[in-house]
Length: 151
Image (cartoon, rainbow, N blue to C red):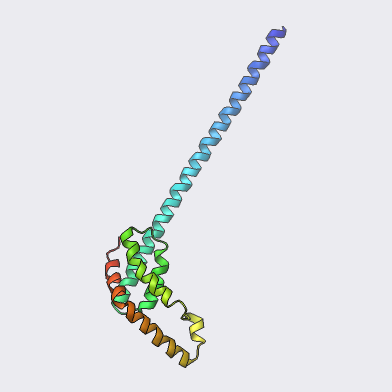
């Protein structure tokens, strides 16, 4: 009788542990599936962001070539957007000139800060900006033309 009781308890314990192991296995599979889904969704979001940034870069490059934007404004925008693109080495090289011009003109106020400047200060900074742009113009224009083909 004692042996039968011990075997029954041992069997019950094994059954409980096997059930718990099965429960943990199901939980682990669900967690793994959820992580895989989250990774896939993140990849899709990154891909979408990359495509949107690339399209925005093409639009800005086209506006620059058509003289709808100044070189500085285009450089600031493209420089910002380039950080959202997973760029090849060739593309990264194209973005460098825009980064350089954006950095060279970063001290010039924009938006509300620009509006608060006196007229003479605006004129002085405009002359400085145009002088800096002139140094980069050929490279910026060539880069913009090549960026139109960015895929």
